[in-house]
Length: 273
Image 1 (tube, helix red, strand yellow):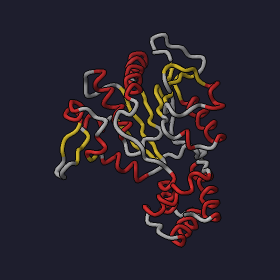
Image 2 (spheres, rainbow, N blue to C red; image 1 turned 60 degrees about the vertical axis):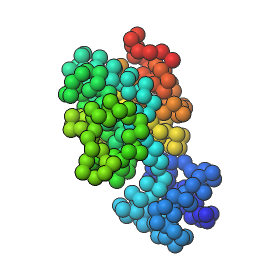
Image 3 (cartoon, rainbow, N blue to C red; image 1 turned 120 degrees about the horizontal axis):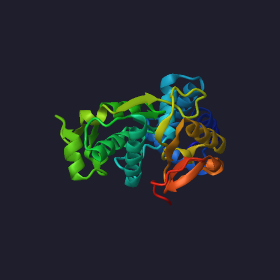
């Protein structure tokens, strides 16, 4: 178990580095994760905390991985991908090309699911769209860029999609994402609480799922305000159904479950909640 001093240091670092607000209930979870990460004793954790406090890059990345949950998978909340693909097609019809952003891409299953949905919806391997995939965890992004997954990661893919979009590698029970899917996705490191986002809008669809629930209230509002500013006038924001917009709710209009449009825009073809 983390000592009171270790937990307080962890809370301060979590807020400053990732905008994450930790509560007492997280103490035991952090202790278990610390052991998995190799910080088997208090001295190991103290060493990690000290290096992260001093800004050492490797320690900072390890600390962020200690905090964040990489709970992801292909086609989680599958209705979101149908809505995203349909909206992207309409945007491409109007503007020639659609832009989508997976803002908490983790190990890549979400942006690759978007790419698959676009290919399916248009019936072609080269849909007029691009997908930006960002995450604070550079090791998770490296897995996404590699585009190889084990059977456990593919549970959300039905057999026809697996056959169409993945091929078995030379390593047993490892599968590689098809080149047509990978070409649509660009991976880039980005911390949503950083002052500078090396991202330019507008985006037609932004997915920011399973991350807002961890952010401190002030950071959550700022992130949502910035996401709204990067949406096209008719763009859609998708969050996890377990999340809420909080005080930033006035910036958006509900369109479907956990799907929002910039307030002031309208789309009579979109499903209603």
